[in-house]
Image (cartoon, rainbow, N blue to C red; front, top):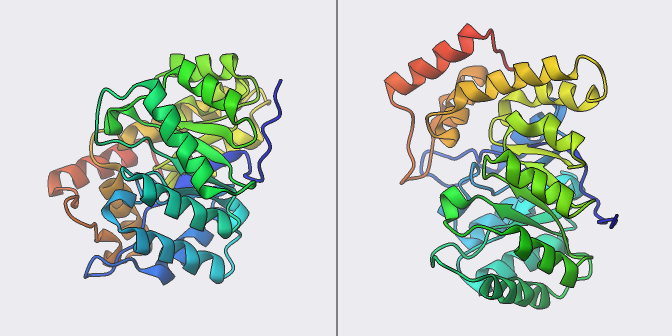
Length: 304
């Protein structure tokens, strides 16, 4: 089994939401406070500037400034998995070089997602150019497989070939396909590859298959529950704990995760500043908010 070396911890990662000010600029102080709060509430690490973090609504300079602020103010960079994948190759290289210069645990990389029908050869060329352009031996890439959003899936054969050609660099993946069969195929086909499920629903199964953990929007809120599954994954009670965690995750499905998480953070902290979402995304409707709160109340869910 290949040993994929990285400083990034296993376990529970929150795909952090990004607090904004009224003018839709990033509230850097609130982001730092939130990331620290996430670590004290069950998360082993933070995925910064992912889908839930509204990354593709921010400029390259905004994304770099957010990371700078966290690291410069004492947040441990080895606990950060930073989204750097963009449509434009130079933007991806720039963000990736910046992230590695800050000593982050890894970068989470989307495929170039505007053009569809991309061949595996085209994707291989793109990632090779990013790796060569970053030119950093400490670079650790985690592929971000989210075909529902990108329309550009990573096939198992593509992943195997990329890992084979860059085994010290391409070390893991976040699988947000929602398909357990795909996660299982990767765990079995690439032993030791650091696979993170993109939803709590498959957390325990991924761990049992040899994967690394979970990276999810809703672990902004379910972090303490997920932590129990992780720490007690070998106990007889693990399946019961997983069932409760899956129930909580399911309560959030149906509306935007960005808006749903921010809505509940606003309720928890009694702070309406949490409701700022950069357009074109927006807040939950009153009906959606009521439905979410009703679902969570029905299962007695509380944020710890």
